Length: 233
Image 1 (cartoon, rainbow, N blue to C red):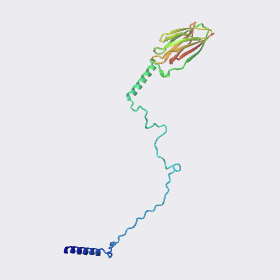
Image 2: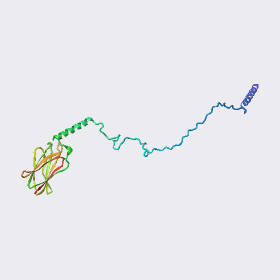
Image 3: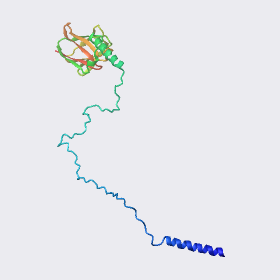
Image 4: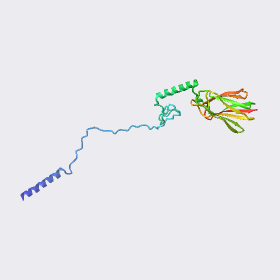
């Protein structure tokens, strides 16, 4: 019993001491002022400015960036195949072939296809009293297989006088019987020779053996004609 009383008395004593220690008379001690003061930063005042784009028309010192591109210049990026990687040997070969071809043409061993004649050639009008005419034809260039066809036209009717006539160094004769009035003769190139266009020379004689005309056709394409008009008086 004595021990219980002792405990109660100790608890009452501790409670009273705590209330006295944290009573309303307790005051907070303020911090010591050490004299260091801070100032607020003042923002820098800048006068407002309007941003104006330069006028490149009034002030030529302002220029647009140059791209060094001109109208007509090739596009630096292209999907078209070019000859940048061509074999140099091909160029040399082509030049040699052109040189050889030119030499053959100059020596009469090859006919020049660059001047191929694709239009009919009219040799004009021949007037005669002869009843017949003799046309003598041959190849005047290299013998390369030229073929021709001879046709006479009278009163709108055509008659073939010679077909697939082979031209070589020897003369081939074509005889024509003339009717009163107009007689038309056509010598048509049936092919191009192996060395170029169809070439030929012709000589026209009357019944007395008098030569009335001589000339030639040169580098005719297939189907091109030499045309003549005979008037029997």
